Length: 355
Image 1 (cartoon, rainbow, N blue to C red):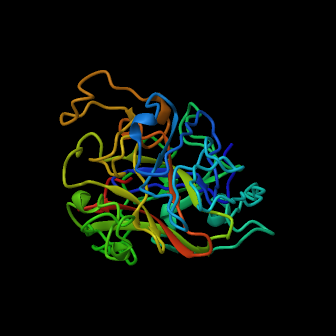
Image 2 (tube, rainbow, N blue to C red):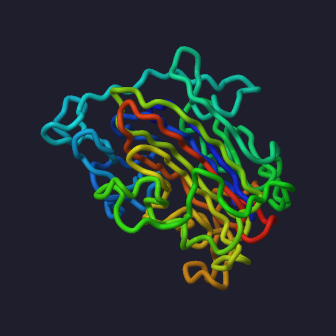
Image 3 (cartoon, rainbow, N blue to C red):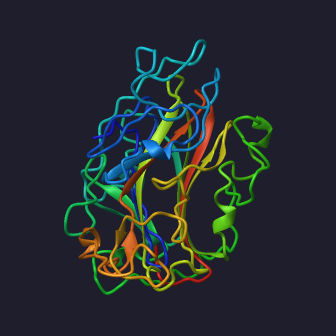
C-alpha cells in the first residue's frame, strides 16, 4: 500500500469515470499493489514503465535545482532517504505519519481521499458540481481490478450520476446547470511559450504542461471538481495520487469532438498546469489517453478491430465501453509553499454520455 496523506477518485461525463486514490506529500516512491517505481528527477520517462503492469507510475516535468520542484522520488539517490538529489539540494524529507480514517459508512469525500484525518495536517477543501456526481466506494467492477489504494474507500466523481456506476444500463446523465463552458480559475487551457522549469516567469501564464489546449474541442459541460489548498510541510518536496479514467463515449464517439477529459491541476510557485498523464505521457482524455481496457470494437480505433473484451469493467455501467487501469501522478512542490490541487472531470461539447 502506498504511504498516503490522501486518496481520491473520480467519474466523468460521456459515461467516463475517473476513480483515483490520492497519495499526498510522499517523499519517496513506495510500491503499491503491482506498482512500478523509478527514479528520474527530470523529464517524464515513459520508457521506464511496464505497460503490462496494473498500476503504472507517471510524473510531470521537474528539476533538481536547490529549492526547486523535484519529481519522480524513488530509491537510488545519495541522501539517507534515497532521494535523487545533488550537492546543495533539499534532501531531508519526512513522510508525514498517516492513519486511514475512512472506515465509517458516512465518510466525507475528503477523508476517503486520505486527507483531514484527526491529528494530521488539515487542508481546505471545496467542491463544484452536482452532488449526484460525487461519492465514495470500495470497488469497481467484478474482478477486483480497482481496490482502494489507501484505507477502505476512494472517491468516485464524474460528469454523470455516480449512482449509475454499478448498473449495466449505461452512464448517461445530464447534471443540469453545471455547464461553465470555459474552465474555471485557476485552470487555464492556453499553452505557455517555453518550459516553466527553465523559465519560472512562465508560471501562472497558462498550462505549463502544454497538454490541455489540444484536447479542448468544445465547451466544458457537466463539470465536476474537488479541490484543496494546503501548506507544504517543510520536510516534503513531492506528492502523488492514483487515478483511473473511464468513458461511456467509447466506442461510438471515439476520436470525435465529444472528447471527455480529466485534469489534475497543480497551482504552485513552481508549476501551474496539468500533472496527470497516461503511461505514454498523454493527457487524460477520451481521444488522447491510452485506454487499457476496451470492451467494444470501435471503427476509429485501430487497436480494437475485433474481439476486444475487458472483464475488468464488466458489471458496471462502463461494460461495453472503455477505461484505464490505475495510474499514478507525481509532482514536485516547494517546501513551505501554499498549493492548490484541483481534480476536474467534464463532458466535452455536450452534457450526455458520462466519464
